[in-house]
Length: 331
Image 1 (cartoon, one colour):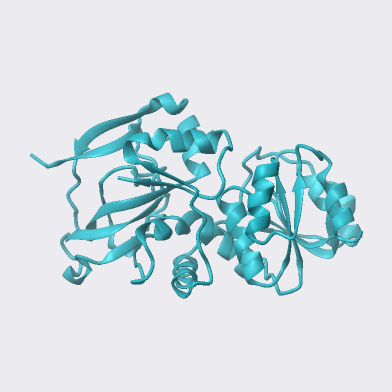
Image 2 (cartoon, one colour; image 1 turned 60 degrees about the vertical axis):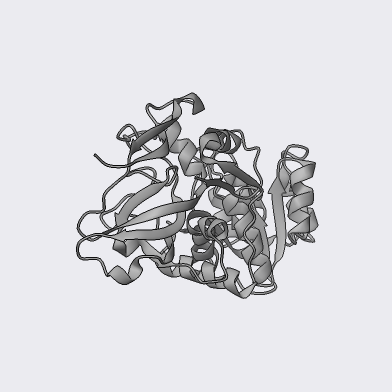
């Protein structure tokens, strides 16, 4: 009989009441797999989507959520180099066969996980487990969206919607690292203060100013922004278009407020706006993020840390948008 481990598992779509703290058998690494002892797991809004259920994307139950995982390799399965044993690793969240940890297969809200060796990325000596677990999905996504797809350069004006979440905060940090002027949209004075401390040049509270495009236009000297990051979707697109300078670029990697959005075609041609999609991260993005942390250029924002048995509280914070930066769970 296998040794047991603690897990937090989702048993049916619904609310956080469906997340249960329980014991499962510890996994055994198969061919090409390594067994990782989990030291930290980062939560993402993806975990909220998985909890509620995505249309046309059934999730096999029960499912252990959590896509950002850091830990220590404890066993090497058949065909895996034994040199991995004892190494500190962060996991590439995408399975080689497709899908994501925590959605299409079990994730990191547990004590051990067996993963394909191709998902192992070694953590530099001076980067901690919690820092590493903050990076893959949010920071990796932002890194690719801003630098590979968005081609941001020093001196550009960058607007970030939903700036206080994991992706938003990381976009702010990368934009400031690149030497950009940042316009950060958020929902409260407290979050605005924290964004200002991270380097945001302009704060727009869209609760106080629902027509945020007017505030952005005024703050930009009525010239507009060069780049807008909009992973909100919903009814924010036309206002985002109104914020753009001629020749500007709207970047998107998601649609947390709704997948169907209206656009005003006049702004596309009148301001020669590009709309650029960014699907996700690749391993090189995560390696680059680790290097930025190791060098001191980047410090992941991790405001909330919870033990495994309280992981459901972290998912609730994300669902209710009462979070700034990343939620980290430690088994």
